[in-house]
Length: 87
Image 1: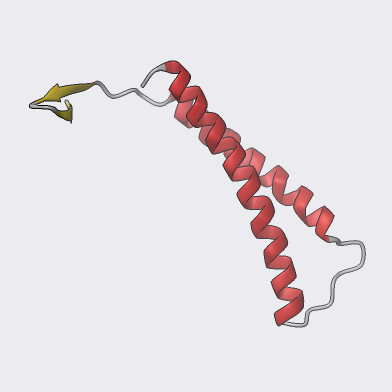
Image 2: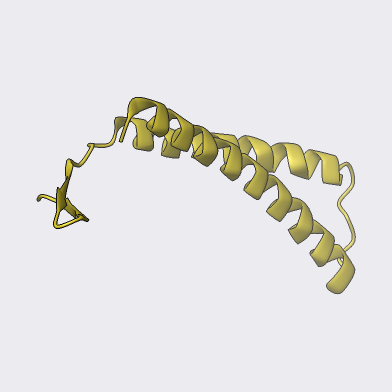
């Protein structure tokens, strides 16, 4: 994989994890309050939940992006018109 492709993939992993964790945390809090009837704790709003989950997603995304960037690049070659990874 070319370096630009690896950087693009790492960026996609980072941004996707931040967005995913943020959205899932807010939806989880909403569904708990709506379906289970749980009262919201004092001082805990959807905004603070979104911030907390965005930070969590950023941390996990940064680790995964570094794995993508540092990971070993496998050599691919063409064999009869098909990609073949030599191990």
